[in-house]
Length: 306
Picture 1: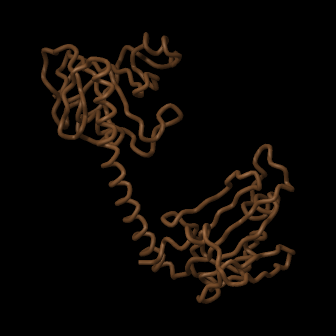
Picture 2: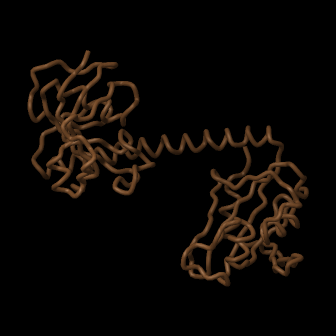
């Protein structure tokens, strides 16, 4: 396994040895922080770079991480501004620091216009590490390793969040005097009105009305016209009389819905308190549902089609 901590050390600890400097053809002055012991990049190999770009005011333009590096197929003749010039003069393991103009970075390297409000003469500081180079097959193996590591980290974080969100929900329910049932998954739910029809089972189609909000009370979506109007979400092109339909257990909705709505009988109503791992997790959803949001849904099951 490659040493994925090297970039973090590079950004925080400078080498005690005297630092070399060199100048690219276009005049960019580069300080070599650490000298690597690898070879120069080879045409058509995949090079792996760790990099942080930020303005003097601290605005971060780009920042890679050990699990999310920058990788590209190397071509020394590529016209990619000063960044390409610097890479052409490195060997694997070299870490360097330099400055380039915003104009050079965006127009010559990224081939796109400057961001709104950024002056072309703004200087961008770059810390760069040429971490590795490998064949395309080697890079596929490498990315699979990174993906597996990221998945393990995500799973561990979600497991922690499930516990933490459960504690937060329980504290909220206690404060509001609400008695809820806690399922094995960590979902909390309250049946507010018993239905007289069947519960949905995997594969059944359900038709529901719902109003969704995050735990602080801010609504983000609803199929109920009155709630939509009260909370500034009304869409005149939406047919609020139809409700929302989906098939239980098919993964077409968040996990908290696939599980929770099956607890409410046809004709019944309930409220679901959904920890973020059973909702949208680290992704969030749009501007109204930040990452790791606890969700609350008031639901009415209109119909269960077996």
